[in-house]
Image (tube, rainbow, N blue to C red; front, side, top):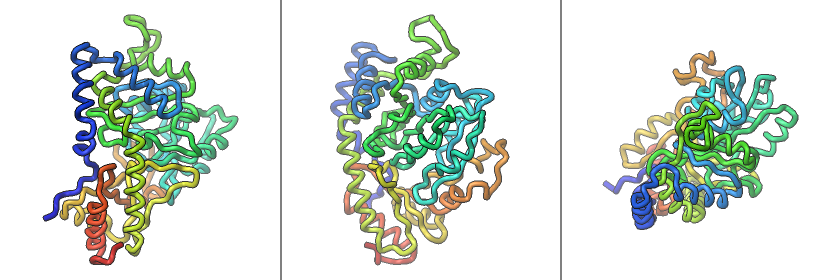
Amino acid sequence: MSAPIPLVDLRAAHAEVAEEVDAGFKRVLANAAFVGGEEVAAFEREYAAFTGVPHVVGVANGTDALELALRAVGAGPGSEVVLPANTFVATAEAVARTGARVVLVDIDPDSYLIDVDAARAAVTPATRALVPVHLYGQLAPMERLVAALDGTGVSIVEDAAQCQGATRHGRQAGSWGVAATSFYPGKNLGAYGDAGAVSSMDPDLATTVRSLGNHGGLTKYRHDLVGCNSRLDGLQAVVLRAKLARLAAWNEARRAAAARYDALLAGLAGVVRPTTLPGNEHVWHLYVIQVPGDRDAVLHKLRAAGIGAGIHYPTPVHLTPAFAGLGHRPGDFPAAEAAAGRILSLPMYPQISAEQQERVVEVLATALGEGSSAG
């Protein structure tokens, strides 16, 4: 049997940065700079330069990043936050943790991104924030969202966990207000554990986020706000700095891999390839297709053949038990539900080879009953 092809190959990424990470770990250990410190400060500066968003605050993980950004713009008990039904549950969790009410809307069926018209229609006098999710590696239509919310007083908090390096009309996440990102190991820019950050154009908002994540204060034993403990540590900052230096090249490799998949899949009847919105530069955190027939059976056949495919995400937020209290039923968000039943994520990482991708598509063709006709 051929060697397995993982959904994401973290070992290959580590091999490229191992020496730098080892040297950086030694620096942190020698200085005992375990929480905060120069490595964290340097990463925040370097990530700000990379994104063009001047104020970056490292935090413990992406879910905290969303919660802290939401709290900083005033989300809390008595308010509402609008977000798409097709997202990882952490987006809704972060809203719930602020005490605000989760308000779900449907998605655009082609891009899987938030439906702008539905989002605007969901805004009420209680709405404090809207969370566009930059899903799978491309940004939501931000200029349309900004225009739709003009005059409403609603803040935009971008969920940028899957789009490090992606742009819309040349602008990265955070340049529209404030963005929260995750550096979970499998992300385009991934740590060796949990880590995250908040990016903002507003220095005061960034200061509030930093205070909230440091027990409500910027100096020891002074607590101006009711905060929490959510800080980026020095060891994770070392990893992120090493990977950030390679992120542009890695994203370009992902784009090349996506183009190969596009060509290889062109001959597979019924397979819907991903759509990139005009104006977006995609970074292909995930390569998500739709397959005809029994998607779960196709997934089983792929995995049985050693192909590490996945589903992002199998259950829309409104149908998860955790959010049953919202009172939604099947059929409330038809585009999100239809996608959840057909989407399939193929292996995608910068180091994936053309030969590996050819095998992925050959196995997929067989699983769909088309033999070796692909490509």
